[in-house]
Length: 127
Image (cartoon, rainbow, N blue to C red; front, top):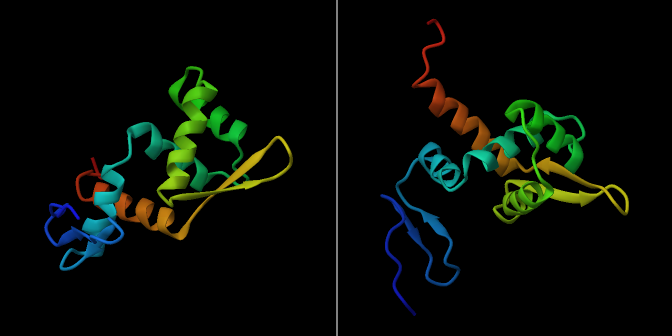
């Protein structure tokens, strides 16, 4: 089996599962490390899913179109939602035969909270 390089100080890959293992790294650093993997669009998707009362595909699409002030195509939206599902940040369930609903997982919520805390250290709100 090929030996993996450390992902970040204190975070190595388990050779059996190839998933990150926490050693001395803080919880906040680990969460930000996971958010680092996301594109800006994926991060925006995660925030929108967390902020909507009943997030389904078209509601998420509408919200992002309002923010970006341009059309978001299905070919961009749904593969990126699926990526967030694969990363364990959101869950997908079926509302009816045509509509999927999304919800933030506990991990997704922790990621958002840690990212918000990290950003607050760099943003002067008192201006």
